[in-house]
Structures are given as structure tokens and as C-alpha cells.
Length: 336
Image (cartoon, rainbow, N blue to C red; front, side):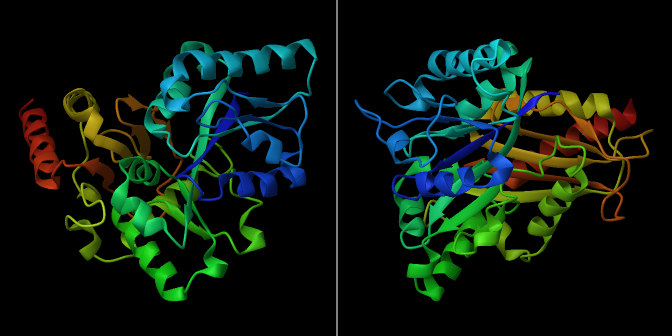
């Protein structure tokens, strides 16, 4: 069985290490391994963790997004080799905390595409920590913050207990505009921590639930959030394409490949539940930028509504352009 890898990201000062402390105190994570990274000459965050043992590894100094192909891959492989030799416990989950300055997309791509890593590990949930007191300002000022929000499966909203309720609500609205499918969790509630890392699309026990999370988040906030203006980081937005006619798998795969090849840098996240011609159950896809996860199948339509729903989180790419290109491929496939 592949070992799930959870990514904990978030901008500087958002509270990632505090969250990691809480996570590591949970009995459910007693056998997790941890990789910690901090930007700068001397890494300090690992000294703040209450649980320090041989399975907590500090990556070499420098930004994780710049050293992924060497440092990250080598650290993961070293951890696995030590596990196999019995030098450390047989960890059943790997948690990676990135620097606050990291662009998480290339990190995710490495976890998904590196052949050595993929032989033993798989990507789990991506958790982005956002501080309630200054999260909107960080989104407005820093592209790294917007990208961290764009790729998230879960938002962990920290410092809500010291922030006015009105500001927390405004942040929640802003997060929905950038990433409509991520589940928002209030960090002030102790109960939200226990299941934060579990229930992902490749966990057979929970993939139906995870797809339902996507759909409920996407459908639950009205039409207005698809038309995001150019304020507070409005270069990144999300939209959903729904289709009632079954897709031809070959044509769709070709279209998605060409779209990713042409616009991959601007497609920060794509999630979809597909109705494929000749297939009774839905096919689920999701990916980050140039990398698409292998498709997975559900045994039934989770909400009873049969039809394709594709959610895109993009940077500077219009919904109309994506819809028109998909429609053109569907017309060609119909002529077939």
C-alpha cells in the first residue's frame, strides 16, 4: 500500500508550525514521519516541534520549491530506506511542512510524478494554513499566498479567536472566490484537527465523501463567485463547467493534454467528475498545473446527479476560452 504524503503550506506567520504541533500530539499520527523546511541559512521551525525524533527531518536550507528535485526527493527516499532497514519506525504517513515562501505547485508535481517517490508514496490532502487576521492582505500582496490557496484541499483558518468575526467572514468569502472546492476549517475548534489529513480522493474508504466535498463547496455559494473581479489577487479565480452529454474519453484526454500543455502554468488546479460514454460510474480526475493524477473510478454517482462537472482554478485564463475549446473537441468527437 502506498504511503500518503500530506503537504502543509501557508504564508509566513500563518501558523503552520503551531498546527503541526497539534497534529503530532494526536494519537492518529503517532507513526507519522515529518519533513520540515524553513527559508534561510538556519532552520528553526523543527526546534519548535514538541515531538522530535528520528522521523522528523530538517531539509537543507533554502526554499523547498527551488530544491525539490534534489533535496526533497533525497530526503523522502532516505526516510523510506531507513524505514525498510528498521532504523526508524514503520511510519504510515509522511507530513511535509513547506516554507512560507514556497510555491507548492512544483512540490506537488514532484510528489506526483517522480518515479522513485511514486513507487512508494502517493499524494494525500494539501492543507493551506491562512491567518484570519491578515490572510486577505497576504492574498492581495503576494502571489505565493494566492498559489498556496489555489492548490488547497483544506483551509485551516488560524487565529480566528483573536480576529473580529466580520474579518473572518470576509476572508472566507475571499478564499471561496480563489478556490471554491476546498473545505474551510476553523482552527479555533479543537475537533477539526483529528481528521485534517485523512479522507482524500485516493483513500478507498473516503473518496466518495471527498468528491461530495468538492461538489458541495462548488455548488453552495451561488453563481456570483464565478465572476471574480481584479481586486485582492483577482488574477486567480475558479469556475465550473457542467455537461449533460457523455464525453468521449479519447477526445477528452486529448483535449485535456493539449490544454495542460498550452496553459499548464495558468491552470493551478483542476478537479472533475466525468460522465464517460459507455461507462456507468463516474471517473474522477484532478491535477496541479502540468501534472494530472491517474484517473480513479467511483462505484456510483455520489449525489445521484449524472453528468460531468469540471472545476478549474486558474490564473488569467477565461472560462469562455476553456469552454469553447472543450466544445470544439466534443463536436469533432461527435462527428467521429
